[in-house]
Length: 391
Image (cartoon, rainbow, N blue to C red; front, side, top):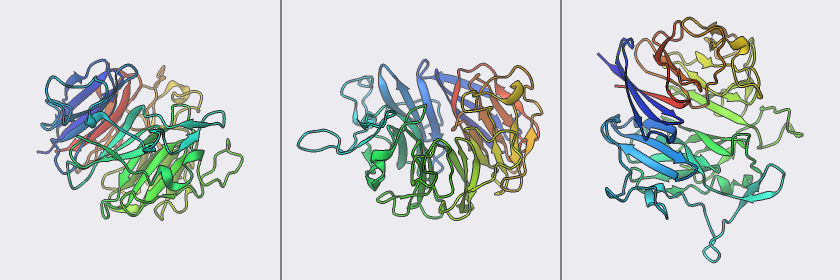
């Protein structure tokens, strides 16, 4: 029987949860890196035992961690035992250097700050790891301040793909309320040179040549806070998702609005339909039903908790517009948690499992596509990310 491994990043460490294919009884291992923010933990499709974790703190900075045994043990790639970070200067595995002038050592470009002035790019943390589907040693990192980095040696060293920030709009990118993070990376499973990324609050972009050049894909997005509703960039995209069988069909949860594109992002259409509110952070697609979507509506952009204190996942079986509430097994009163952008995932078992984690430290699973829910863990630290591996 197949089994599943759920990788959970929290405000105070990483957790590895495991169960058989029934997904009824769970073991919870951790915390790994206790006390640290773990923004993202993700495993490789090419080698399920290879897992990458983003460990970060405001005091010690960013640390890349790797496991080669399915999360049992961890190490900093390319760093000798006893010489691990925290250290200054950072080891190559933890060094994310933006493009700089050889003469001055200063950044070649700046971006827009909250007050409209220009501000230097400052690396803060890795928001998202995306391993290559074909090579466990190739992994992409989306970082704050927004940029895309790549490693071809299993995280031992990193280099920026500067074509993204150099596209020509980088000087106009502005942080959202939570910073300016590149939080979504999707690789076309049929063409690894084509990728999609999303930045809060710059928008979505696509490359067709492995990251050398980029095209903004924000046509059709509308944001009330922007004077020019047809602006090329500036939209606060919260997350994107695709089904691997249809890489031209994209789904988006924006800062207000749920949307879809049927042409790889060239044009977006709102599909919020009958949702009670279309503000939220996460969105995902059923493993076997490309038109079945999941979102978690949150009351508003200032009140990041469920409507009426009742936690509900909403499902559309029609690719949007028509939505139904899924709440069996979820708390329906006095629940004021949030579900963050990288905190929802799906497995690929025959009866597709849906997973999400909350800022209240709960991790839930539905082993039947959302019809019913049960907790995997109840009292973890605030959950930042959830990923699942089908083994």
